[in-house]
Amino acid sequence: MASKHKSDPVADAMSCPMVEFYRAEGYKPDESVGYLMRRILSLIAQGVERELEPKGLTNAQWVPLLKLYMGRASTVAELARECDLDAGSMTRLLDRLEAKDLCRRIRSSEDRRVVNLELTDTGRIAAKEIPVILSRIQNAHLAGFSVEEWQTLKSYLRRIFETAQTLQASAEKNEK
Image 1 (cartoon, rainbow, N blue to C red):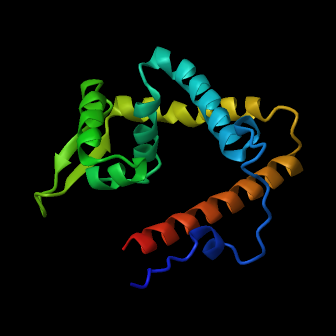
Image 2: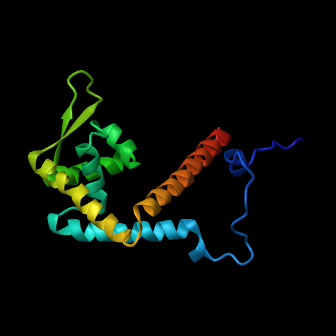
Image 3: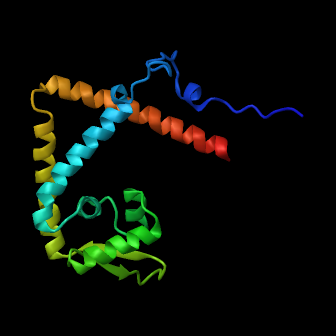
């Protein structure tokens, strides 16, 4: 019986030769890019949560609030996709946001399956403050960087992100 050969998604994602930056022998998790990014995100999230806590918002709540404010979603389904949440989790989250009078759900008159979302006046006021807090916290974490270093860092992170998306798409394609 012939075995089905699956292509290597890592190799597929690369258009140039791969360099083995990490090796199993001597691997140190705290030296990995993934570990460092996860720790940075965690510390930034803690800072954001600390600043938003007096306003009654958690990390789970400010993200969808900001996405609605910035026009990234207008329906429950779109917001769930944007926040990478399943329908049940999004429903519970929206229940909490509605209880705080930050948004409201409005069933579409054209298609009853569609539930539109809108920020309340209170929600718009709260959401308007989020970019101020995010900017302040991220700037604090970038203290000591020049503008050129910041732009270089972003370009490197975009490259990692694009490769990660390619790897994900390749893995999903191979699963089918």
